Image (cartoon, rainbow over all chains, first blue to last red; front, side, top):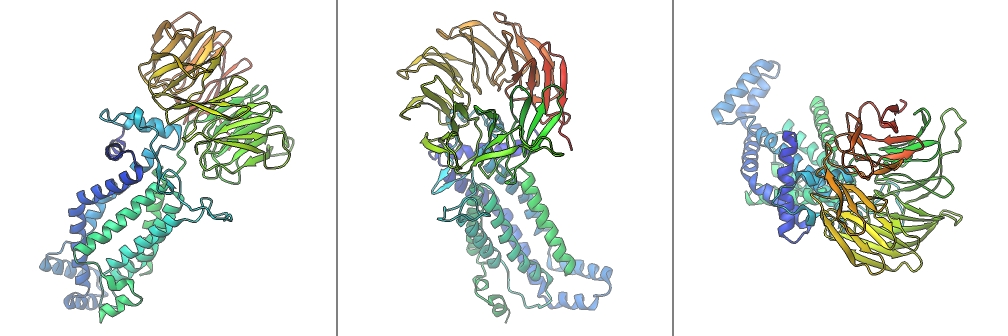
Length: 263
Length: 366
């Protein structure tokens, strides 16, 4: 077993342990497991949010803007001056990336643990049985109950329509739309207002608020709906976390809200 | 700014690629399916269904559907020699394919003579064909029954809801159809009335039962081989094994031959479930069903070894060791033993003579 497989198997075992103790409901198990992961990674998220906020504030800082203009044509000097300001203000420019980097394997492992647990082919089932610890009775666990609400968590979600749409073989993709919407809301809420019209970070965040919902919506459309349940839970918890920290920027949800906030 | 936008696109694209490549999308690949008639072997391997000439191992054709189907189940043959094969892809299509048409053109292609798209999940099991009637289990829990003598596209005559994923090929005694489900049950379906009797077993059933003289023999993930009286559904005997039984047993001269996931190969008396011989331990887990070759039992292990066992002996002889895993049931085709290695970089199918020497191996044409 490779180190990565071992890492994922920890997630698989945890997920199945939750599934077992709550009465074998895989949808609820995914939700609880996502909450557990969010709680464990809470400090990392907090650190990331604080760093991102500090970097965003810096974009609006007059000294910072002044050196941007002054050394626009001297990249080396600009970099030196930026580092000086980071040092003065106690900001580590990489500290907002680091928590994200650390969380990436967790997100990937969570994603894989959901799909591996659902084992939709004989090979997947064989691999699953070999990665389950002896503390779980794998004989009684299999097959996993993949039904949750109206969904089969092992298949892409869709509500049947009275007519066929060729590119929507599973029907109307409710969950994919909810995933896209919650991702959009989360991204918008976490975008701080900016006073700087040339703020490149804000422009990038603006683009992210369009691309990320589309990307995750596409995943939810084509991948097992268990993954969509994870995305939605994760998004809602993310929104809740921002709100609890008092950082949710609700005005951004309104048309022109970001501009209003800049005045 | 333009560069940053490009970078963002690239990063998101990479993320999408990474997640997709991580293998979570359904369906994940599994081992190939295999069948053979008098002329060709048919290998269901991913997006292609291959026809391979038995005489020399040459590719006759490779079929790939426009609907991005993926094929892994063992194909079945209809009474007129056509192939039935289901897709494990999101298209969920069951195909009937005439293997012998249009072969004189430059790029020979078989003809899809019928297809069914009404199932809600993947086709993992091989259908059972009885005359013109097809019993096709689907992972959506339904046993779909088709009458191929009906002209027109709609050949579905009935659907029996058995409640849980069906991955096993059914068996029949001519009056009833027997099919196991992953929810630890064996279903006995009357072919006339479609009335269903269900026998609870201790674990998931992935193998095809062996049927003889009013009794049915089936192993399960409960690590036991069970004999069931067909008439009343009562368990006649239970014989525990060291590990899960993944596939159906071979019944020959009143002895049941089968393996388990821990790598034990058993010979049990069908009459009472007692060992006919001590179990043997080859070199790895056994997931495929054994086959009978000239009165000898041939079985394969996960570690890639093809064994032959004389009747009455518990000293299996290694016929061939492949540098790949073997999960697919071997197939006897005339004088050849066909073995489909899993994820072998050099060949998708190996044909062995009965003495174990290799006759040919098949690599798809580019």
